[in-house]
Amino acid sequence: MTDPADDELPGDDDFAEMLRRMLGGQGGIDPEQLRQLSSMGIDPAMMQNIMRQFQAAMSADGDDDGLDWSAAKTQALHIANRDGLGISSGARTEFDQAFALASLWLSEVTGIAELASTPHPITRGQWVEATLPVWQELAEPVATSISDALMAALESQTPEEMRPAIQGAGRLMRRMGGALFAGQLGSVIGKLSLEVVSGGDVGIPLMPTGAAAILPQNFADFGRDLEIEEDQLALVLATRELAHARLFRHARWLRLHVISQVTDFARGVHVDTDALEDLASRFDPSAPEELKAAIESGALLPQRSEAQVAALTRLENLLATIEGWVDVVTADATTRVPAADRIAEAVRRRRAVGGPGEQAMASLVGLELRPRRLREAAAMWRAVTDAVGPAVRDGLWDYPDLMPTAEDIDDPAGLIVRLQARQRGEEPERDAFDDALAALLDEEAGADGTADESPTGDESGDDGPTGPRPV
Image (cartoon, rainbow, N blue to C red; front, side):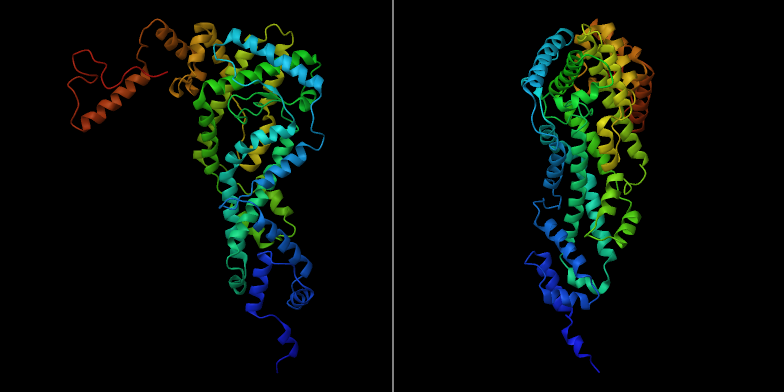
């Protein structure tokens, strides 16, 4: 016999329509709907919280991939601006003067031109606004991966009988995953804004090309335990920031080179689907703290592959080469500052333990931005400067293939020999690399039936299949 109460229960079509209305934001759940949900064994309060989460994700301004970066901006600015928005007139004047003097000193030790725009102090909120586009670009590959994996995991956990009712909700789930990631990204960027001292503080080019800035709100924290006069600290940090900004403005290819290496690494990151499916099996959209914690801690990112380890090594060498040059140029420009060496050592130690950018990239992208070979790279640049002078040294930034390699960091003497030979108008001597490359090319040519009688060229004195090794 049919229970009359069963007639009051919603059928599959009614439940599907109820979900569509709620997911589409067509109004809340009326009391009769709440009663029906209770009769189905579903907690109405939990369902209302879920719908609020879903409706917020659906109505958010995200791109077609469901990544709502406005959430990151809102969260980051909330943290950055919590202690006030302004810069005192005294601090603004102090740093304006420090930048002006630092610019003069830099022009004495490097031919790389001054910036087109005037450097200036900025607030934490302004730093967030200026750097957020780059953070998005670096984090987007992992955000997409987590978002896609969350959608698939949640759908796999949905009971078979419920799947027709949530058809079309896949895009919403993907957006929700993107919104969770964006919220975590915003939180990390906001925390970083409380720590960074300058635009180039994290090593990668976060600021627009040619822009240099210092954050006075964080300046005092950096120097608190150094027992160094503030005017000396401001001069050295302003010089370092200008050197970093000048380099990226001069070598316009360098910014793309760094960003590409980071994003290439990030695209190789794949989410640990087993861990995510385990989370999805007990995931409550009304209380997503566990998923947020997993994203923030990096627990969803598996161990690095061999290819990623190799990519990370290349990136670390690149960052060390950049910061080593900045170190040497800053040291030469600030010889008039008594505490310059102490400040430089404090900066190096700060970067050696990861700096303020490491936590952000390690947790969200699985990437640490430590220039592990900073001291070796600085020693290389010092040796090059002493041997061939600033003009030849800085010329190595003119083209990507001129830039020093990891091998040059290991053996500056070889780089110096090549540079000195070029200064004299001579071609550098062939080395073991050249000979090995020539033998390989000759072997390939012989296999094609195109080899010459001589293994290194014809008898006319040509250099053969290899020219001078590029620096």
